[in-house]
Length: 198
Image (cartoon, rainbow, N blue to C red; front, top):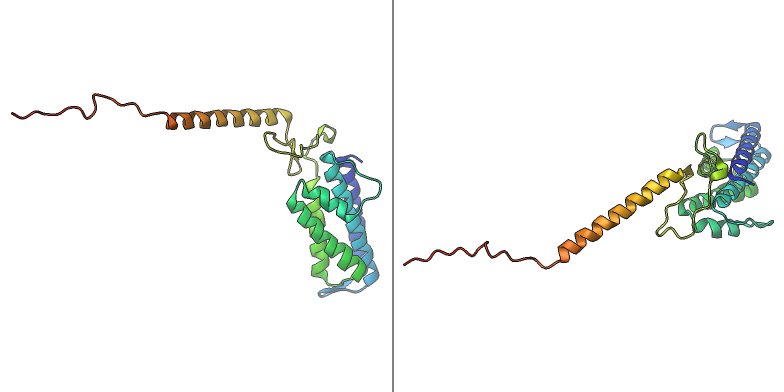
């Protein structure tokens, strides 16, 4: 599944989850029907996992046929700690509390959906971007600039420009360091004028 397909599929899941949640009906701070809340939270959690599939696909991680939450945690931790926190929160709220426990509190379910949409935004393609040219980011960032940064596509020319700018800056810092460590030159003219009094 390409990142664009994952984004579209996860978005479709979230829309279906919102429709199921509307059927639950709410009064003040609670939903009425636990069945629809459980259904909506389960569907939204599946949408989160599909969005995570898209995120890992963008980074070149091969997806096995059967995936557990530990698989997602292990591989997402290598790339993005904030996304890992969001995934853990979405898992707790949508899957454990919403789907298994059937929590009826509107604020809790809303928080779960907000987190789910923030995860979806991580794989949202840039406007007009051709997602097929996205390349996976290297596992080690030292000395390399990522092609994909925060869900936005960096164009190859911009990537080249940034790496050139970084090289120039490093050369300038090295030059300043070598000038500072060079031995100070003594000037015989300065401070050598003494007036002899007779």
